[in-house]
Image (cartoon, rainbow, N blue to C red):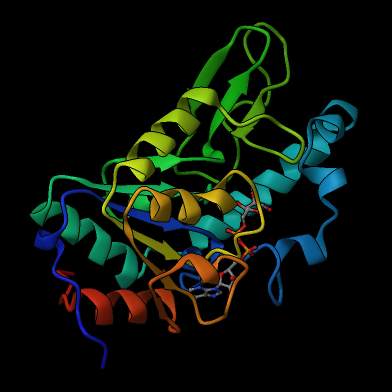
Length: 239
Ligand code: APR
């Protein structure tokens, strides 16, 4: 059994999550066994060029991902974060996940670095449209006639500047940084543990595997997300 963390010892806490956080809910990871990028070529399904060449195919692929996400439900690890946010006012979740699982678990203060499967965007009108709950997109085209694209950061896209600066702000000023279920190979997310560490945060990694980021952590928990969070925060979830 590991020594638990008392959140009241910290002023600002960031949970930084990747695909491994959702893996326990049944959502496939990207690079591990059964990972999405082993099955699908991102150049055909997850970049602007692919969308311009074959919007229907790219939208079909994202509808499949919505179907997968809707088959899954948040697990106890998600609920632990939600419960901790009830006890502590300065807990942020910075996630690379686009599946909306943290929000479905009731979490607040969630910064989605890579966008969301549940939003569409018209680049012609600069309009964002929420499209929640069902697998099929309500509409594939904007009222102006332009194809709507998933409001997701694809390969070769720039990240949204406002989202990145919000993430930088909470990470550089936190005193506890907990990374959960990310391989740490995608930038700028891969730089966050270093950023937190250099600004004085106590850094913990929860991941069954060693990662390229492991070096930056003061403590590593080689468990799955839900077991690691449960052991670390010693919290019974309210179901
Ligand atoms: N609990 C915790 N961690 C887990 C679990 C689990 N149950 N299962 C797997 N992991 C870990 C793996 O060991 C791996 O380190 O989750 C990590 C998943 O890594 P990736 O598949 O690379 O996912 P991620 O780091 O989130 O990818 C970042 O890359 O393709 C892009 O935009 C995509 O957001 C994604 C980004």
